[in-house]
Image (cartoon, rainbow, N blue to C red; front, side, top):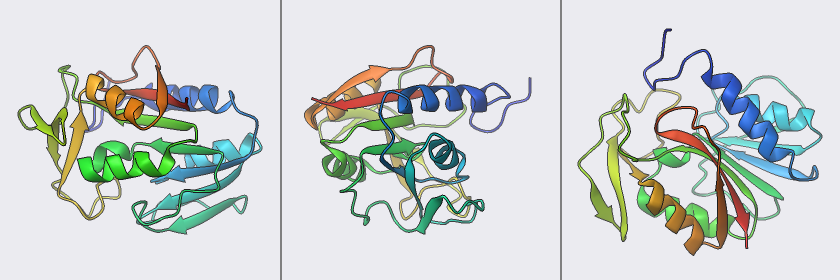
Length: 198
Protein backbone atom coordinates (compact mmCIF):
# COMPACT_ATOMS: atom_id res chain seq x y z
CA UNK A 1 0.00 0.00 0.00
CA UNK A 2 1.32 3.46 -0.88
CA UNK A 3 2.38 5.71 1.97
CA UNK A 4 3.37 9.36 2.16
CA UNK A 5 6.57 10.80 3.64
CA UNK A 6 5.14 10.53 7.17
CA UNK A 7 4.19 6.88 6.85
CA UNK A 8 0.49 7.62 6.39
CA UNK A 9 -1.59 5.42 4.11
CA UNK A 10 -5.22 5.18 3.00
CA UNK A 11 -6.28 4.10 6.51
CA UNK A 12 -4.66 7.01 8.35
CA UNK A 13 -7.22 9.70 7.51
CA UNK A 14 -10.26 7.64 8.54
CA UNK A 15 -8.54 6.57 11.78
CA UNK A 16 -7.72 10.19 12.64
CA UNK A 17 -11.32 11.20 11.89
CA UNK A 18 -12.59 8.33 14.05
CA UNK A 19 -10.48 9.26 17.08
CA UNK A 20 -11.25 12.95 16.79
CA UNK A 21 -15.01 12.40 16.51
CA UNK A 22 -15.00 9.87 19.33
CA UNK A 23 -13.09 12.17 21.69
CA UNK A 24 -15.01 15.30 20.72
CA UNK A 25 -18.27 13.41 21.29
CA UNK A 26 -17.43 13.12 25.00
CA UNK A 27 -18.20 16.83 25.45
CA UNK A 28 -21.39 18.83 24.93
CA UNK A 29 -21.02 21.17 21.93
CA UNK A 30 -19.61 24.57 22.79
CA UNK A 31 -16.63 26.56 21.58
CA UNK A 32 -13.58 24.86 20.09
CA UNK A 33 -10.30 26.17 18.75
CA UNK A 34 -8.45 24.04 16.19
CA UNK A 35 -4.74 24.92 16.45
CA UNK A 36 -2.73 24.49 13.26
CA UNK A 37 -5.98 23.73 11.46
CA UNK A 38 -4.33 23.21 8.05
CA UNK A 39 -6.80 21.55 5.69
CA UNK A 40 -9.71 22.35 8.00
CA UNK A 41 -11.30 18.88 7.92
CA UNK A 42 -11.42 18.60 11.70
CA UNK A 43 -12.80 22.12 12.07
CA UNK A 44 -15.61 21.25 9.67
CA UNK A 45 -16.26 17.95 11.47
CA UNK A 46 -16.62 19.87 14.73
CA UNK A 47 -18.98 22.37 13.09
CA UNK A 48 -21.00 19.42 11.72
CA UNK A 49 -21.30 18.19 15.33
CA UNK A 50 -22.71 21.54 16.46
CA UNK A 51 -19.57 23.26 17.77
CA UNK A 52 -18.74 26.96 17.31
CA UNK A 53 -15.28 26.62 15.79
CA UNK A 54 -12.27 28.89 15.42
CA UNK A 55 -9.62 27.46 13.06
CA UNK A 56 -6.15 28.95 13.48
CA UNK A 57 -3.17 28.36 11.21
CA UNK A 58 -0.03 30.37 10.47
CA UNK A 59 -0.51 30.01 6.72
CA UNK A 60 -4.17 29.53 5.95
CA UNK A 61 -3.39 28.43 2.39
CA UNK A 62 -5.36 25.20 2.77
CA UNK A 63 -8.47 26.61 4.45
CA UNK A 64 -11.65 25.44 2.71
CA UNK A 65 -14.78 27.50 2.22
CA UNK A 66 -17.18 27.01 5.13
CA UNK A 67 -18.86 30.00 6.73
CA UNK A 68 -19.68 28.08 9.93
CA UNK A 69 -15.99 28.21 10.91
CA UNK A 70 -14.09 31.35 11.89
CA UNK A 71 -10.89 30.92 9.82
CA UNK A 72 -7.96 32.87 11.29
CA UNK A 73 -4.43 33.25 9.94
CA UNK A 74 -2.07 33.67 12.87
CA UNK A 75 0.64 32.16 15.03
CA UNK A 76 -0.61 29.83 17.78
CA UNK A 77 2.20 31.15 19.98
CA UNK A 78 0.58 34.61 20.00
CA UNK A 79 -3.11 33.75 20.10
CA UNK A 80 -5.18 34.09 23.27
CA UNK A 81 -6.49 30.61 24.07
CA UNK A 82 -8.91 31.70 26.76
CA UNK A 83 -12.63 31.47 26.19
CA UNK A 84 -12.72 28.07 24.47
CA UNK A 85 -14.38 24.98 25.93
CA UNK A 86 -12.10 22.50 24.11
CA UNK A 87 -8.72 22.87 22.41
CA UNK A 88 -7.86 20.67 19.41
CA UNK A 89 -4.13 20.38 18.69
CA UNK A 90 -3.97 17.96 15.78
CA UNK A 91 -0.63 17.55 14.06
CA UNK A 92 0.87 20.76 15.44
CA UNK A 93 2.57 19.85 18.73
CA UNK A 94 5.48 17.93 17.22
CA UNK A 95 6.29 20.94 15.01
CA UNK A 96 7.00 23.14 18.05
CA UNK A 97 10.13 23.67 20.12
CA UNK A 98 10.16 22.40 23.71
CA UNK A 99 9.73 25.98 24.98
CA UNK A 100 6.72 26.56 22.73
CA UNK A 101 5.21 23.21 23.76
CA UNK A 102 5.49 24.09 27.44
CA UNK A 103 4.08 27.57 26.81
CA UNK A 104 1.16 26.11 24.87
CA UNK A 105 0.36 23.67 27.68
CA UNK A 106 0.49 26.50 30.22
CA UNK A 107 -2.01 28.47 28.11
CA UNK A 108 -4.39 25.52 27.57
CA UNK A 109 -4.26 24.27 31.16
CA UNK A 110 -7.71 23.98 32.70
CA UNK A 111 -9.45 23.15 29.41
CA UNK A 112 -9.87 19.75 27.80
CA UNK A 113 -7.48 19.21 24.91
CA UNK A 114 -7.56 16.68 22.09
CA UNK A 115 -3.93 16.17 21.13
CA UNK A 116 -2.74 14.25 18.04
CA UNK A 117 1.04 14.08 17.87
CA UNK A 118 4.18 12.12 17.10
CA UNK A 119 6.40 11.07 19.99
CA UNK A 120 9.94 9.72 20.11
CA UNK A 121 9.00 6.26 21.34
CA UNK A 122 11.76 4.18 19.72
CA UNK A 123 9.45 2.69 17.12
CA UNK A 124 10.39 2.92 13.42
CA UNK A 125 9.72 6.34 11.92
CA UNK A 126 10.12 7.58 8.33
CA UNK A 127 11.56 10.78 9.81
CA UNK A 128 15.19 11.34 10.75
CA UNK A 129 15.44 12.31 14.40
CA UNK A 130 18.42 13.33 16.50
CA UNK A 131 19.96 11.12 19.14
CA UNK A 132 17.99 11.11 22.42
CA UNK A 133 18.56 14.20 24.51
CA UNK A 134 17.10 15.98 27.50
CA UNK A 135 15.75 19.51 27.10
CA UNK A 136 14.16 21.42 29.97
CA UNK A 137 14.20 18.14 31.89
CA UNK A 138 12.24 16.19 29.25
CA UNK A 139 13.68 13.29 27.26
CA UNK A 140 13.08 13.27 23.51
CA UNK A 141 14.59 13.86 20.10
CA UNK A 142 14.89 16.81 17.77
CA UNK A 143 13.37 16.83 14.30
CA UNK A 144 14.98 19.12 11.74
CA UNK A 145 12.34 21.06 9.82
CA UNK A 146 14.07 21.06 6.44
CA UNK A 147 11.52 22.66 4.11
CA UNK A 148 9.79 25.53 5.88
CA UNK A 149 7.89 26.42 2.70
CA UNK A 150 5.70 23.30 2.98
CA UNK A 151 2.18 23.89 4.25
CA UNK A 152 2.71 21.19 6.86
CA UNK A 153 6.08 22.45 8.16
CA UNK A 154 6.76 24.35 11.36
CA UNK A 155 6.36 28.10 11.52
CA UNK A 156 9.38 30.10 12.60
CA UNK A 157 11.56 27.31 13.99
CA UNK A 158 14.01 25.02 12.23
CA UNK A 159 14.05 22.30 14.91
CA UNK A 160 11.07 20.74 16.65
CA UNK A 161 10.96 18.56 19.75
CA UNK A 162 9.42 15.10 19.87
CA UNK A 163 9.14 14.14 23.55
CA UNK A 164 9.26 10.50 24.54
CA UNK A 165 5.86 9.05 25.46
CA UNK A 166 6.79 9.15 29.13
CA UNK A 167 8.02 12.74 28.84
CA UNK A 168 4.82 13.81 27.08
CA UNK A 169 2.70 12.27 29.84
CA UNK A 170 4.84 14.06 32.45
CA UNK A 171 4.57 17.39 30.58
CA UNK A 172 0.80 17.05 30.44
CA UNK A 173 0.56 15.94 34.08
CA UNK A 174 2.66 18.87 35.25
CA UNK A 175 0.21 21.18 33.46
CA UNK A 176 -2.81 19.73 35.25
CA UNK A 177 -3.92 17.04 32.82
CA UNK A 178 -4.88 13.42 33.20
CA UNK A 179 -4.21 11.65 29.91
CA UNK A 180 -5.97 8.86 28.04
CA UNK A 181 -4.06 7.41 25.08
CA UNK A 182 -5.91 6.13 22.01
CA UNK A 183 -5.00 2.59 21.04
CA UNK A 184 -4.15 1.12 18.67
CA UNK A 185 -1.83 3.89 17.51
CA UNK A 186 -2.64 4.82 13.92
CA UNK A 187 1.08 5.24 13.10
CA UNK A 188 3.96 3.64 15.02
CA UNK A 189 4.97 7.00 16.53
CA UNK A 190 1.64 8.86 16.48
CA UNK A 191 -1.75 8.70 18.13
CA UNK A 192 -4.40 10.79 19.91
CA UNK A 193 -4.18 11.78 23.55
CA UNK A 194 -7.28 12.95 25.41
CA UNK A 195 -6.06 15.48 27.96
CA UNK A 196 -8.56 16.11 30.74
CA UNK A 197 -8.12 18.80 33.41
CA UNK A 198 -7.88 17.39 36.90
